[in-house]
Amino acid sequence: MVSLAGSLAALLLLAVFARTRHAPRSRRFAWLGMVLVGCALGSFAMAPFLEARPVVERLGFGILAAATGLGHACAFNLVPLPHRRTRLRMWLVPLGMWAGGAGSFAILTQHQHPWADIVAFAMALPVLAAWACLPLLAKRPSHVQLGERPVPALRFACPRCGTVVDWGRGVWPCTDCGLFLKLDMPAHPASASNQLDDPAGVVRLECPDCGAPRLAGRGRSDCAKCQASLSLHWNMHR
Ligand SMILES: [Zn+2]
Ligand SMILES: [Zn+2]
View 1 (spheres, rainbow, N blue to C red):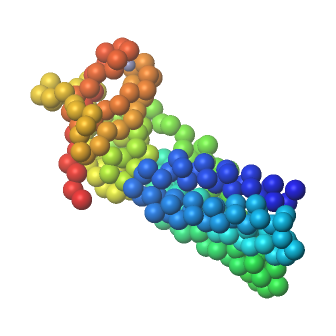
View 2: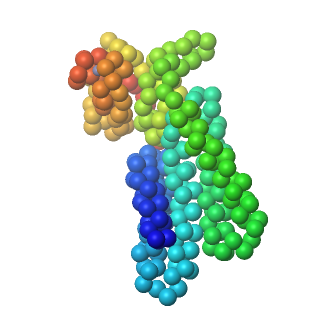
């Protein structure tokens, strides 16, 4: 029963890592997390057949706590945050990993150090609060502020770092890696049609007019459903 609960949690984490592993910002953590989850699943699978079952199960949960911290980091690296709140990421991501590490330590040492429990709990609280507030934080704005002026926004993942950003019409920097991107809706008359095998990548977005999902690389693209055009331009510096 205990192993089953652990395995279910591990599968949930695996889904988080599978989703976030494509974004350059989360790739390393996601792979490391998948290795940890694999180890935890191995422990839960073997535990019922071993005499030292409680120890092996505890080992699995200890590993799982560390992997949970990594899962939080992978997800919070990429979730869209309001433009004025992107600094939240700078302390929420490490805080989650420390909470995972402290939780792991507490579990593995059988809660013999009450201070470790308290530290893990104290660090987990703001992390849980951030998840509770996520629907509010990640709410899709219709407009973003360009100085004093609101301009229509379009949400898609940054082609360089993978963080989901609300880009305004015009020239915008990525909130997290600073990549500058120029967005025109409708397309700029001088822009060439875009190529989906562009080495700089393509972005997945929802058509600003009809909401249909579409792909766009650098240059002009038209919506297959409503023919609304847009153009994107960015320069990839690695
Ligand atoms: Zn970026
Ligand atoms: Zn459309």
